[in-house]
Image 1 (spheres, rainbow, N blue to C red):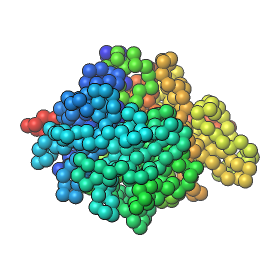
Image 2 (cartoon, rainbow, N blue to C red; image 1 turned 90 degrees about the horizontal axis):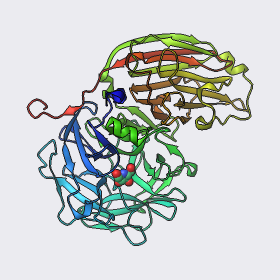
Image 3 (cartoon, rainbow, N blue to C red; image 1 turned 180 degrees about the vertical axis):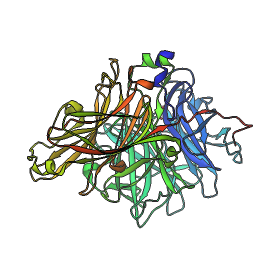
Image 4 (tube, helix red, strand yellow; image 1 turned 60 degrees about the vertical axis):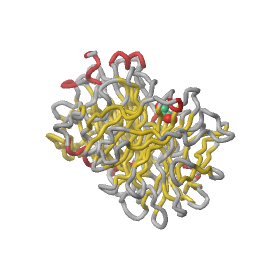
Length: 540
Ligand code: DQQ
């Protein structure tokens, strides 16, 4: 349907048609990045799940390959569900995935490349004695899924985690194995948190606390912290915790129980789910993939013939300045799509102003912006007792405060009948300290009615002397925002009907009542990634 074709993205990964959900088994193998994904080959809604497959040299320019695995066995007859890749010490690749059986029991299965010398990994062999794991006693047959990438123990065994729940308590089970065929259930859990419900797509990995280099999944010891991430089925968000992992006890302890697994920090305060990381040995970094779903109706998705995107892959590492959150940033390869740029230096936005930026079209952009709040206003503004600005419930970009909101209007039409504000909101506490929140306001993104109109976002740590900074990737119907170098990230799906193609514009706005804001902004037009099928003769 050409009526909705402007929503299709140009540099985010999406299949040429139909439904996609979770990222699966991302891995670097024989100089190719491999990406698998939950895919419905028959419809633009969830169902009939197979593993789609694509390869890339740079995680931006993707080539579609044939479907990797389909439900052709009793143990995955209801779907080839989410799983992870592990590269063994000798370079062999093994894949563990969840099968939903002919009776809808969730079991874990082993698969491996039919021809390990094939860099494209076109054919997959399922182990003939699958399943390798069935739900243990006490676990409901439909609460046992999404095995992690394995990490080595000090005994030389491989260790995986699988998400589940007991009553309302989310848990991560731990299994050790030597051969990925026979598994031993460990006592206790990696972590359990009351009231969080089913843990989907557990991820478990090390981050360095001494430098910014990514770590192999098995790294352990001095200078290493661990991250546990869970996808909460009940509220459809990805939560992580940073802490220490006791390898002997097979258990994880968060640094801060207020930010325990599943309750505190989120990778993204917008639309981002079922994510998974992998270690990229070619550039010594850890990469995070996340599924970005639709915020419109299934009926519309069927009309347009596709649903869902993957976020731009992000490097992920510990924020060594705060020590208490991760830093996420689009992989550097996305910069290769940058075309012409426009620069706006020291632009003064007075209280209550909207300033257009001349940037040709504004549907495929990479924006880097810095904002400075007028020092005098910061000093003279009276402290407030209520500094708890919450994006979801604070009235969006139109509610004015002394020191905010200010930021950008993206995917805006000239008459401002549609626009998406990305903004900072600063509040001053009674003790004089400042608190900064970053929000993405979808409430006026579209004149269409059957789309999500929430204001999304969260608080962002800012140190004295730091300017407020923002990186934004705009791609037709997705807006990915990275505030303060990637400390707080917010992804929106938006569905403008007027602010499309050449009619889409970009503005700076300042809706604060007291403070003038100085903005410096660089905007690149972004090329398309031309994602297409692999051609054996020309694609090498
Ligand atoms: N999606 C898969 C499951 C997983 C869920 C099924 C998360 O394995 O728990 O498509 O989105």
